[in-house]
Length: 182
Image (cartoon, one colour):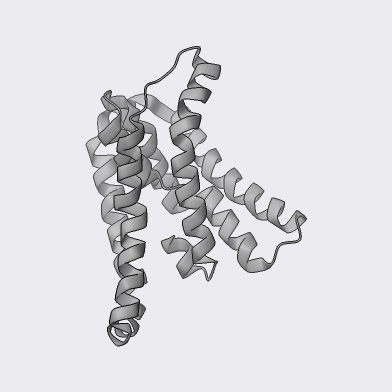
């Protein structure tokens, strides 16, 4: 959502896409695992819903409330919010990678290439699919950002909180770096 704001995209659409895809993962993760791996991976559905509310929706509600109750203050701090967001993202990226350094090195280049492809191809396909659907530039940019930058930091948080095995978080830790680069 931060990148959408900085890029002049449609932030409301970005929030809607982030929330719906995150909540959709509750159903899709077990289904995809069953299809691909032949087994069901248990998912803490309520935990993911609560985390989504805490990390995605609660800050939005707080921002709307603050903008309604103290609009002058919000207008005064608005120019600084992107840089605060970028610094926060850098800290999240560093923390994610640091926690998983050994398994990341052990995974080697295949994991790096897979994560790079996810973000790069996601952005390109998202942009041009939106263009093909004759959507305006602002929406095309938003869809490209949302498909390229699925929140790997949020994925890392969800993997850390709601999946037992430590190595589940390793792809998200790698992905968070490629998300920031692409």
